[in-house]
Image 1 (cartoon, rainbow, N blue to C red):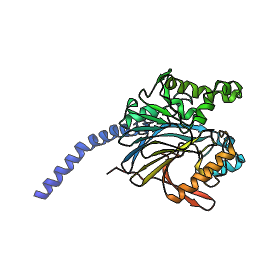
Image 2 (cartoon, helix red, strand yellow):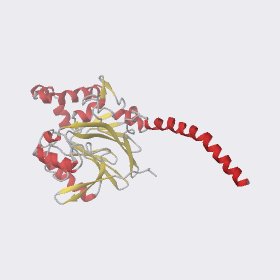
Image 3 (cartoon, rainbow, N blue to C red):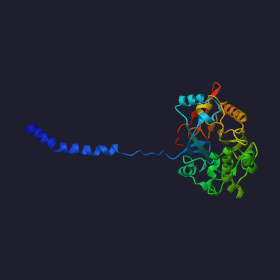
Image 4 (cartoon, one colour):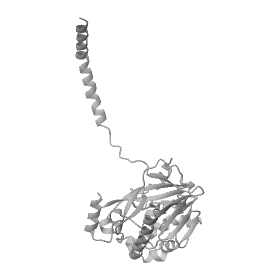
Length: 326
């Protein structure tokens, strides 16, 4: 008798409330399905330690480039190599800067494109702030070279974006790109490179914050500049060393991993002297792969940090692992 009573009570309960539950389910389901796409990524910075130095890779954004036209090899070979690496043309290309806190100085290597390369770049300053630093905290800026995507972020509306920073670059590059005579005689499609360098660096020169150096130079304790001419007349790589650990920032020695790791002899149309650029890449990459130094590259997929390993006549790229900096 007791069991029958419970059974009847459950039957009544189910009959009474099933329509309510069904209605609630009908109303709730579309709420989840209608969530809009977020459409954004996380702030573009990635941090690792190098001995006592803190290294922060900072994204300036990405830009689509016609690598089948820019790389100095048959277009079909470029397209095939890109497809093998799940890429296509135009090729989305990272623009990376690197912020190194040595404990004594806060140093930025390369300053991004600012407004010189279109709306998908120019994010460096916002990502520096997202990483926990402010532009006025930066003591020195080292430029690998003076192409627009490396200097454009230095100034905005003729004002210093990094008001307390001294800017360092090889004199071969400053003499070449800041020359009015060179601008005047440059082909029309190259004049923008000179104009961008002048607009970006002139405010620093006027404030006596532009301090060129010449060739291989020690810039600070544990920090060295090494000539790697070819991509531009004064293209320079920077080495940071702390507690036996080494980071080498190679600038534009490489642009397209999918092609130039397997075939380091392939150059790019942006090179001022293609033969010298290829020779610099061969020399530096061979040394880096042997010593196992950490490498930072301006145009490899963000964060552009990893190691090189010899693989036959080419190289493998081994990206850094994520670290919580314990």
